[in-house]
Length: 351
Image: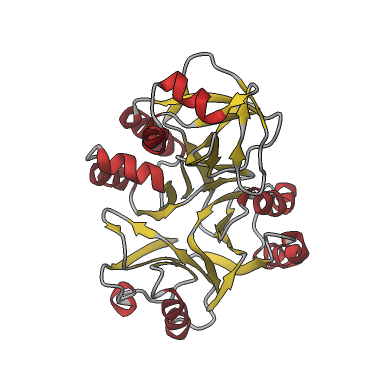
């Protein structure tokens, strides 16, 4: 298979797709004001080709902040694209679409992956999608777009999750998740007074969550939203840790980008040597896949901000380009199989 990446910093879709011929699956990463127009134009340029899209920044060795980027697979891919609607209330209502698309594409747990773009309610959506994927052994990578809108096959949807089922006819696929954080101290917290709908943590070990965070890290209200780049929370999930970013201060509570429930056990994390972690990821991928056709990744917006502040973002993209054809999305949350995480990178590698 082959991966195409095209971009236009000014939002000119025809410029972005210049040179794209005979695609078999397309991903559109657009800006808020031109999204609907780009979705319709893309469908008219490549009618009937499975496609998904969202509002967000795209990248290969460069980043497109406000224009448009197109990532496409061709030359040895079988794919289907569709959407789960009403995800805030009942995404399972549309699960038969996913089941039918998997059956149509075929494939095995070795050569098939699901890529999804979500408008929100990620944890519930992933639980729904993975209830089907798990039985097939199919892996998933995806992320949350901006603006509460996604697209599938030339149509724009709100309150929805767009997905593509992609089968690599030329080899294997495998997903990866990169965590650049490790545990800070030996703090363990029991969450309470949470608001699941608003992703709010009211108390930690019975003490207001804001006070706990401020007292441990010696920060003020105004510093919390940048301190989360260095010290997010973590939720232990088996042998893994799901990163939870702080979104805003809400009185004496903390609103997050990921749902926290009463009685959840949380830890505090701190930023590690992210440059070394990136090199470890690259080495792991190269060891698993000596020959690579494509790498599609989702990097968190907070990682993008952190790397940019550290003057590392452009170097990061250059380092990842060693893998070959690497492209991706800057998301507002990252999906990895049935896990919804923050401040992470998830990716799928095609042999």
